[in-house]
Structures are given as C-alpha cells and as structure tokens.
Amino acid sequence: MTPSTAHAQWIVYDPVDLSDWGSALSGNNAGPIRSNVAVLLLQGDADAIVPPADTEALFEEMCSTAQPVTMGIDEGGGHADVRDRTIDTAVAWLTDRFTLAP
Picture 1 (spheres, one colour):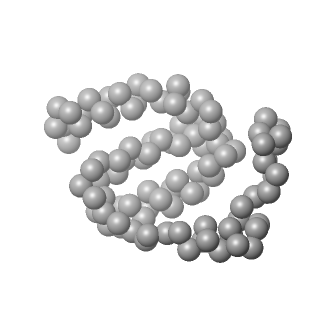
Picture 2 (cartoon, one colour):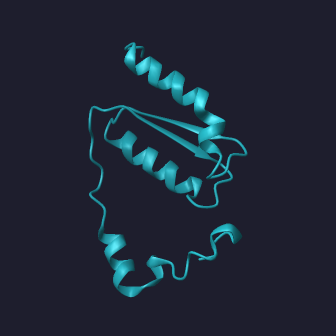
Picture 3 (tube, helix red, strand yellow):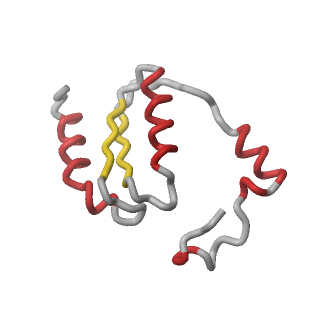
C-alpha cells in the first residue's frame, strides 16, 4: 500500500497485508443483498483513498440484485472534495426521492 502523503503519518500497516486481518476482511462480505431503499453512490474519478473500480464493483453488485441504485462519477473529483463538488447532485436526488419522482 502506498498511502497519500497527507495521511502517511496515520497509516502504519495496510490491514489487508496483515495475515489475521487480511483474511478477516476478505471474509467480511455478506454478498449481494437487496433492499427497497434507494442508494446514491457518488465517486470522484481521481479518488486516491477509495478506488473508483471498487465503487463501480459495488454498483454492479447492487444492480445484480435489482437494488434501486444511482451512481455518479465526478470527473476530476478526489476523496476529500467529492462531497462539495457533488452537493447539487445529491440534493436533487434526495428531493426526487421525497417527491416520489422516478
């Protein structure tokens, strides 16, 4: 693991690289579970903390169960700024849920 410079002082080990934690994390997956609650996933394509491929895999898994899910990719967005950069998208999405818009 190569932590970002800003977070390097907090990260000593990647849990996935530790034998006990790595196997526990790998086994900690409930598999695809569907709920009726709509989900919004917003991902910065420049996120160095949560790889966009991980969010895309989650989106695909949720879609495979017919989970109501919407995904938005923030071009140029990183981990720390995706919230501020996508707030209008999130508010519009939530407003649609409360007004029962499709």
